[in-house]
Length: 478
Ligand SMILES: Nc1nc2c(ncn2[C@@H]2O[C@H](COP(=O)(O)OP(=O)(O)O)[C@@H](O)[C@H]2O)c(=O)[nH]1
Ligand SMILES: [Mg+2]
Image 1: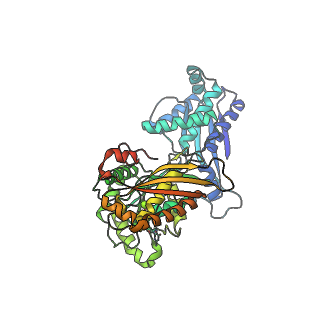
Image 2 (image 1 turned 90 degrees about the vertical axis):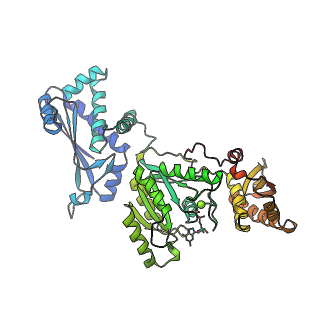
Image 3 (image 1 turned 120 degrees about the vertical axis):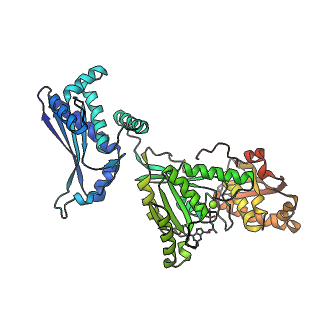
């Protein structure tokens, strides 16, 4: 960063104050990672020009550019179009076609009237240096498109100023926020979430309505933090459970920073009512939407084109990306695109907070997965699993050992018979497979005991749903 200070006044000893200006600019620009990223991407460096001007001069500038015939403390003149710390124009056209040395791009000018700054310092009981530091940070933020036109904008700017001035080096601001996966049941939302986390956080099956609540998987790299949220598929709800699932899905969609609408490459080329409904919510909230066309591995590329055509006609997507959640194709492109639309803020989650799924919860889900896979018709959808005991041998030998007792709740007495099977064959088979999956997940020796219980109509009973953590009275994002 090249900072040039022009002294055009004679009342104050400017040498002394120059360091203050430089330090304030450096603090601001190192706090916000965007300039570093642009520097690396375009192999450039930035400059800023700061002028100390007289009271008359700043009054003149203020009148000319803002229509206010009054002296003021500082004026910022950004060279580029920015919005909240995000560059809104293509700077490549400003770069020389061939460069011997690293090109220098000006971010703009700051005009400062020390006389006014000094007077204000007195009013706020600050030293001139403190007041100058504060104002330069404020002006530098203006150069990057921050403003205080709305109340929210003003709060954001204030917050940034405080952070920069307090010199808190622990937090870096990054594109960071919620990317919510929405779409019909069975399109592959959970598969994508698992791919991103590198492990099973959400169970997946070929059956719809496998996912029942909101599942978080946080993706972190040097440049961003994306909190992916898996949602229960958008469907028509017939029970209280169904309505709760829908409510949490809607809440997640409405609070998304970026919405990922997922469809399948095998769909007919038309935008159906359900996708329209999701897009309507996004449009109302002005949430950026990326269309993910999943399972691109099972269709011929040309077949996706008509789908892309009708969707791009129907909605102004930020991007349309064919992916394969199962194979990981297109996932890098998706990450890059999401990053562009996240707010620049303090990362929402710390290390160790990557997911809201506990080992206990996942054990439940792995048992339910076996029920979904091994039973037919309405049985699997009326099943819930509770873990009644989850204990670990406190002094493990070499290997970890976990004892789990769980109940499979079913909706009807006839379902209990099916779940037990002839001579208990079904429950045995579910137990064997689930135990093996839980054992892999926990990297432990697992002893699993399963019980089948009838809890008629539990899907419509508020107490039962609350006990299972599946009610949605008040939905907060995990
Ligand atoms: N061929 C293929 N199958 C996939 C892909 N993604 C998901 N699936 C399968 O689609 C089914 C539903 O996936 P799931 O993630 O449970 O869907 P969700 O209901 O949207 O969460 C599962 O059988 C997955 O294995 C993909 O990219 N390619
Ligand atoms: Mg799912």
